[in-house]
Length: 143
Image (cartoon, rainbow, N blue to C red; front, top):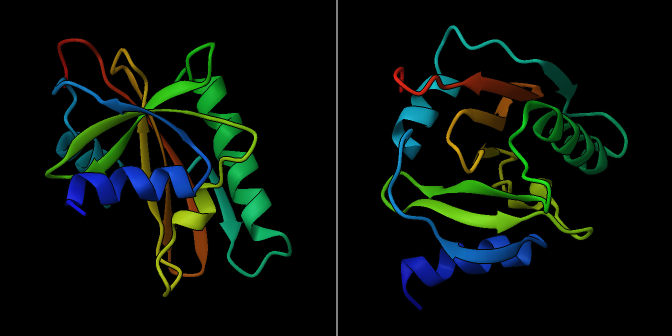
């Protein structure tokens, strides 16, 4: 299995509909990553890792923020970072989607999603004892 197949399989295993690889466009995964993982980035929501029903809370919070921020298209589609090298993959949110299932065995989680237009990003990351929901806006000339 190639790394590309593995990336697609991960997202399918997390309940997303995989539409396909998205052509390289701005902002790149690297630019989005640098913006949301910046030391000055401030979360719009913090969820303690020891919360009961943590998976449901992370999934619900991310989906609500992504929808409100315009990251999700009307049909639930958006772009997700496959990796810095792979680039963007177009996915569709389903009733089975589970971002929390993408976390690493040590609890680390980084999920970066971008609107199809490239103007909005909504991410989930683990920061010490919390999961953070982060949003960023990219202006057309300010990628």
